[in-house]
Length: 258
Length: 258
Image (cartoon, rainbow over all chains, first blue to last red; front, side):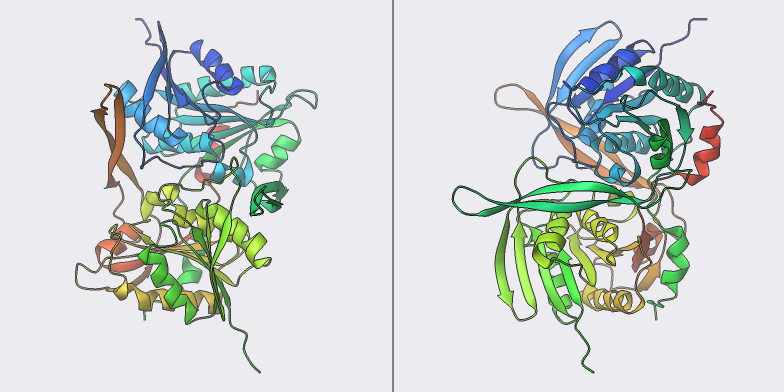
């Protein structure tokens, strides 16, 4: 009996020309049929934005046996919606997003277009994985990440991911002597400590540039930040229930309904 | 001893001219000193996007005793960051966002600029509440919501909200005979069932418009969707830990680290 090759959907938020997605495509083409729908320009920091005020466009860039590639003028979330509904007209066996140039560990997931695409996949009940490398450089070195990305994707295809849950995978950069291993962990608590550069334009009006540094608030050994600091790849199963279940009783004590 | 008026920060995602934020401002001015920093144009669907590629601008629109109002060319998340760091140069006692024209119940929170502002507040450890009305009309009727919004805000100022947790408040529209009461509940599971209108432009190129309907997947009596359907105001305590704690053990069984 001939085994059907899995259908793998690839997207990202750094745009279709980024080195990260080119690396991810090359890994996935070894594992199955690949369809790519990715933004035509960098979309870092777009989070889960969707496009409602301009028409969306799709452009076919490549069509080969077991391979199709499209670029889209929308956000990562748009790419997934259009990819599933218009390009595939079905659901893929798996969605992979990335490889992001930069960390999406801890609280960064909330700003992440890479992870927005992953959550779109999960909402469509497609097993979905986001891959991010802790190196923001456009020319980041992804070679040391390839083996683990393949391993995690194969494991997800084989085992399945529980419905509604996806994986947020962050990979150490290659500047500290290679990868120690892979750890399944929880999201560390943390926050971005921001500030603004205040400048004056040539006509005398003020303007502001956002700048920030990540502040760890939680170095529990079971967190993604702790794993990454020890050069482990972190794998965090993530979901979209925002409910603070532990706080329901406390808020109920406010007796709002009397 | 004279009691200090609380400092209340107001923002939204429908833009500073929207009827919803004008209503919210009028309620908050009765409760304390108010500073408004809101987007200069509608930002629905921007989710937690932040602006990194263009300079941010702030413009003072009004300055009265106990009241300041600014508009900003950024997203709701930008408005909060700029508001705290540049305008206030301190943290407010509470942040309120909205009143959104349209529901942010169930999974809609992930696309919501209104709730992105709230999460920014929570990350800065400021008690934060998002208010949304189940009516998308620009001329929606907010009158029946005013009393409850004031009550919930006063309760939050009095009781405090546990750190890292915020409130997602959704309010029935006034088309079904008024509000039954207020319920503290959990986020219902659900998803947007999307499709695209495929059209052809005057030069013969295809383009796509996103359209979607919300599909309830979960009508548990303890959910926001069930509360709203019974004309209750829903109050969901929300937080930003995306970890699917219940899935950690299952993913560990994949033995990725061997």
